[in-house]
Length: 118
Image (cartoon, rainbow, N blue to C red):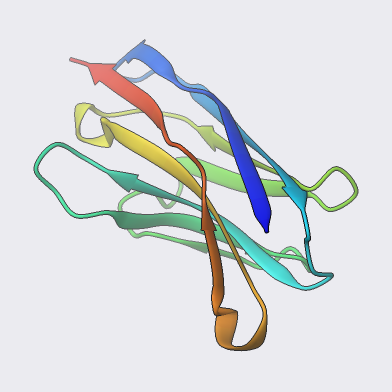
């Protein structure tokens, strides 16, 4: 089992910045993908960004150029730096870790609220 604990989030004005952190613990494989997803009001959960052990990143088009994902493989943490925030970025943000054959092991954090006021 893997546990994911998120921190950060909160209320920020449009154009501002916010950082999220996710700490993973438990039975973590040497190869995994960590990422952030979000679910806005009345919307489905969607990908925000992912980062592999090797540092390869993937971003949703809506956040490219504004968000930066990074990770510390020693501490098993993933960070999401969010800049130039927009009201439409308002959502509950979830940390995710995938590992194992075909990424069958799929773990989620409890979620943290990000609210961007206009």
